[in-house]
Image (tube, rainbow, N blue to C red):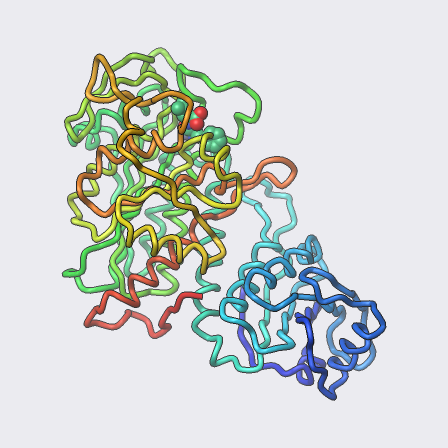
Length: 496
Ligand code: BES
Ligand code: MN
Ligand code: ZN
């Protein structure tokens, strides 16, 4: 989908030709003399339009206005959150086949973050998954004009959001694909395809290389599947080589049956989303390719299936991780931490300034935080604060959880250095404590996105989270790391 940003007064918006014109109407709007402003003013005065976020009044082919349809859309105080809520209320309208060109015009000076929120919400509301629905109507909406009083002032925020949309949709497309259309091999191919963009490189490693590295934990998970594992290594170089990279590690379980510790049948299909962390890393790289910020990023994805099989790893098996620590696999369904621990050990070779893993790791995190905030665990307060702020700015929030050492007590094993599960209590935290054993002293953060990466029920589908959080964090690093060289492309990104 194409976005454009335009300076557009309400008087000019009246003659803007499109299939749908949406006017964002805030509380306490002072009406101007033009026809659209008068229309808005009388609709409010007559009680036909409220300005609470999402309240709306639809008009068809109004006289003297070039747009076929006009929606007057309340947006409360006009902040990013309210604008998103308002656009979300348009619902299926943006999926209508009749609406190919839309314009969204701010009736007021937009608040910081509001233009970005509008762009992202328009994309979100019109997204259609088609990869395995060849007969489905593709997205009809192809062009969205965002109209503001001063386009120059909103330019950076707009560019960030448009790139972010590309990344989020890439992540959603891959996470939504069923497991037989998103095998470790195909995820590897998708990563390789990203390397066609300038600034991005990709290396793919198979089982032989992974065995040579001694990634016994990753191998143990993969050994029950006929699909060969992939270890994906992406690089984005936007800053001088002397600048330490941020390393992102994404859990890439393309299907999680639980293994021999088999999951119950209900909703097991949703375990195709268990590569949501990996998809978010792919999405971040897709967005980096668009924005070209001055930062170095490494993306690591351990990708495999977790299957029950004659060769599958069994409860009680002890394996040796790349770090040399032995692990007693008490529950084969706690596989995410096993593939991640070897990738975290591998990450040390990049001497990262920050190491961040992203994983649909625990059902316990869904119980703790629901679908609103991702779980954030961090060994470093500054990194935690920056990720939390990035999440807030991106409307992709997270919440910090504790990492007291005593939480690791339950991971003790009589037969190995560590067990892969503790008791049921505090399951999201004990999973994080397991991972922490493999990161040494590096500034590390872990995002548990089990509750946020996808939605179940009628709206079942991937959300593209936390691509927004991660991209905003990387733009913050780019803006503050004092690189001597400027970004490769002129569009200077700014947090929205
Ligand atoms: N992929 C799951 C986590 C998950 C479960 C995410 C449900 C979203 C919804 C993970 O591999 C898993 O199975 N975790 C177990 C860990 C347990 C065995 C300690 C869990 O959360 O039940
Ligand atoms: Mn599992
Ligand atoms: Zn899993």
